Length: 337
Image (cartoon, rainbow, N blue to C red; front, side):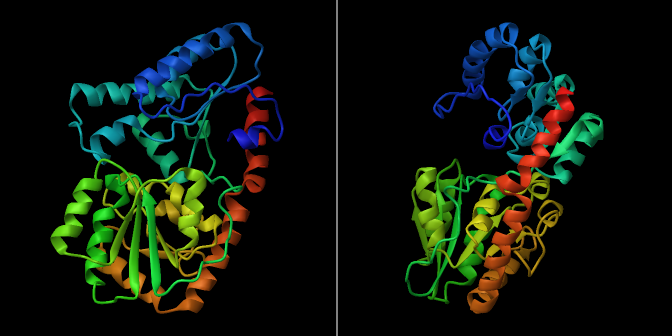
């Protein structure tokens, strides 16, 4: 979004990337820096990105200019249905629901990553459909672009992520177990997250030797690992409803690098991708289907090549900075006119 804004306007950025701090503390820090500027400076538009719901409480009341909010996700849905931390009738759930709805009501306009996700917000929080626009997540094209596959033996199947439940990494492990007698197929799981320990235990209990765990690396180094892959797993393979509404960030990275990518067969992915053309669709929550998909692509180099070339073309046409900047500019111009 920032790269798009910078194509057609001046941007003043206040951000906080300290991952060791809680969302509340990070929001407080940004809010304390931003509020004086909102009250004294002459901006035409205020953009609030992830995680912006807490920031919208003061911004929505004190900003003198239109606010474009990208909620990115529903706090209520994440805590209650995705991560299952609270029951839907709990006090925390009710507060989370109120935070989502209030922040959306206070925003002048909102963007989300898919039309399927927009439909969820409209239905769940009673927000008018015309208040939303869809902007695909995309990725940093200076980092993620097609590169030659380094020489290696066998087939490398790559996944990177934070091992969240909706990613369905447990399904990848179960698929790998079905392919353990195919020594030419090796899995490369990269990243860190709350479920890594549990996933490692699954691999140890199944005595799988076809899976390599790679620690999380800085974003600028990630393309080197994706480049090594013959097949990329983008998910989201889990069974949560949230997994049906969003396109994973890793999907765009894989597409931008021209990789044969397996994605879950869901409404969100179907918005920009076509099975057998620029991605390989796999039934959600089905390790058997995932194992079969991996084996089919592993045995068909021509199909992998076709998928990879078409994937990059689709990314450039639908999700690249060049493709999306005119759309973002139109949203901004309409808001400030």
